[in-house]
Image (cartoon, rainbow, N blue to C red):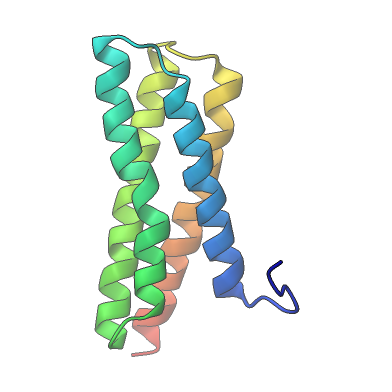
Length: 124
């Protein structure tokens, strides 16, 4: 069992992004097995599984500029994922109850990452 003594904000965000990735994977699994479902699923899988791994990369950045750059990639991928989730919602491919919480989480994660970028730029 993992030692969970004390997590810093970075660890908490990493866990939240990991949970987000798993939720995206489960949502993609539930998309219909149609040409549209496969296309949107592929897009969601690529963009929605990227933020967590890119965030982990940012935590090992070689410089402040590298850190900011990698967080920028996280933000870009979160925004793309939010777009595809909105496509699923508007096209009524899945029930709103399945999609809306993930759109909300995307928006919250975007706000956190955007604020982190602003803070990192101030502290250069």
